[in-house]
Image (cartoon, helix red, strand yellow):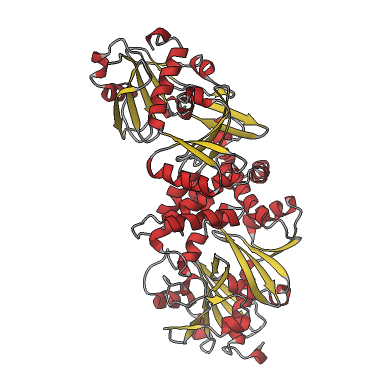
Length: 298
Length: 298
């Protein structure tokens, strides 16, 4: 069995995943919990100890590296953004120590500005570094609450764009004119109709009202509202990225299926990667670049 | 003094306005209350009696005509949509009686379909009829929770489009990544920056994240978030209507000022109309077309 050389933690807004990472970059063990940076409570040190549990005694010499919202200005310790273009050396050079017995460190997020446009990400930089050699000249889509589309060049994050797809979907389906108390059933046809509405209407702020108007006029079944709204929001996102020939999609489960279908509809070639192993691999690559883990242990 | 010939009520989702309407279409008296169709409670008949108050004894022969969400399928009595194109005769021919002592009637909403696209409005049809002779060949913008842009031809509603501008603004500023507890201050510069962001980004779902990223990178003052978000959402709406040369804007107060500024930025000529007198005038025109009020009393 490979040695565990790093205890890595991807600590996001609403959940936390801890990885006991072996010297080949794979996770020898994974723990998942709902204790998000903003959804959980209590001192971060005690919470981290709980998440790592017996790993701390089992692998006492493995350093601890954290990424995600834990390093935001409302997190545990603020790890200020590194400006893009940013790769392993820029991220490794800007790790911030966290007050934890085995001197944990936190990976910074990345910022990007172009004219007036500002972009920030935090957590995704680590997944992107996990792509390793696959990362050159690639467009990567990381869907979620705030979907990120990142351009990678020479192993560095060259630039990226954010779409509020997941947040808008959750807000609109839970309250207001589009919300319904009827149990939702996935419908591929309604999803495709949403994609078509997004293509037809320049503004999703118009296309979204279709979820109400079509329901009122009997053209959309109330139980298919969520699929239709997903189609509109994902379609609006992909329409802005329509110049792409190929995309690497870092997603799993229903989200991966929905984005894959939408990308195929837009005639963009898709390859997929599971984000969880990318996080573990990215944490190890950054730890090695920072000298926390010896390269010859890999 | 002109005789009061009609008691008109514009009863929307979140408020109610009652008009004692004189034979020239002007409101001799107006009562306003927060008792919206969905925000108030109790039997509609009793609530209507309360809103009309002593008007019922003072003008016992004046018929009562209602418009707005009171006629929706979740309102008092359902007044099904009339299909566009719809003008005075179509609306007057589809009034629905309400169970009220002096035989009140409810104005129906209007639906519009074009290919797969569906549109509905309810309440705005009455304001649009209030435009009378101004209504031919005009594009009318009625901003609000669900902004409507209506094409009028020969005094009839030929078609219209809906943008969820006001609803999205309220949702995004009250919760989620863009919300802030800092008291908001109007900023014309931040509003203009929002318009520019909407022009730059094809999807407002991308431009909206700018409200967070610019704040985090020190490019947007937190107290100007609401102005910036307004600029993005209004800008996205106007970008879809950019082919227009001139617009009649039915709005008042801050909303009228914001849309006027955005339309001027887009080089679209604006004329403005106060929506409240339009509602009173529209109710009288529909009542006359339906024979509820004699034309020679006007």
